[in-house]
Image (cartoon, rainbow, N blue to C red):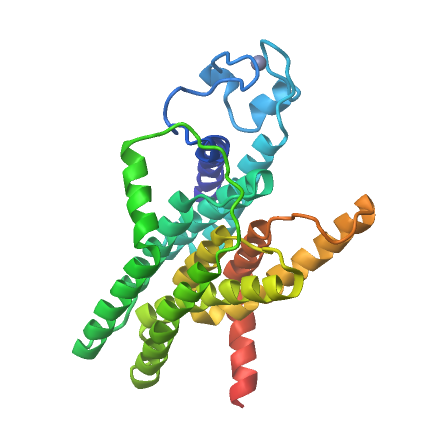
Length: 328
Ligand SMILES: [Zn+2]
């Protein structure tokens, strides 16, 4: 019975995620105006706004102008509900269920926005970094005075890394501007070197803290943020050296940092492995089908999301198995 409620609630959440996917990249308010057809702008009445059912009833067409409604809408609703149900079956109605459900919802929005617009909104990734890190504080077993010092250092590092973006996210809640046209960004070597300069001392501090006080979840989380950041920064630099082009963007950096914040550093190798594998398979397939060579802009965000989702359901077992085979 609870499972049915979770599924139906998941459909409703999915319906809200569709609004986020549609409006976040356009910098539109999430609440006003209410649901309307993007083609004829006619308001959609509540009885025609039932997740999945309305889409099937209307056979994928707007009721007033009969423009085609994208199948993405019911797909997002079903995906959200199924993930919610799977999490519920695994964790019951525990705090872990709620935090992972929240994370999954955020990841669905990120994946579909990145697929369509090749951007990952800071509203989600930067907020996610802080939510993930804060959650690790609650699940930390004990806080020694020494780790309190470490905590101060790590919060300082976080603010140095993501402070400006966090400010703009907080400010963005209060004022909404018209969407600015995407400017073509040139390669910013200095920015990436600066990021490395901030993160590497942080990594050293975290490793030191973990070696001396094992079981500190906040240090796992912070190390996840820093290592996640550097993995993408280093691959951007490497790709630039090899091909004189930017392979990934700043959005991917913040997305992997967010995943590191939630799962800890232990998850990074798994997520990178799965997402690169999925990315290569899909990239090669698309290249073969379209018969285009090399230069093909496929966003990496959706593959990081696939890696993260697999990690939620199978990661801890695989990572645990990996580390136990190493220690024996
Ligand atoms: Zn219409």
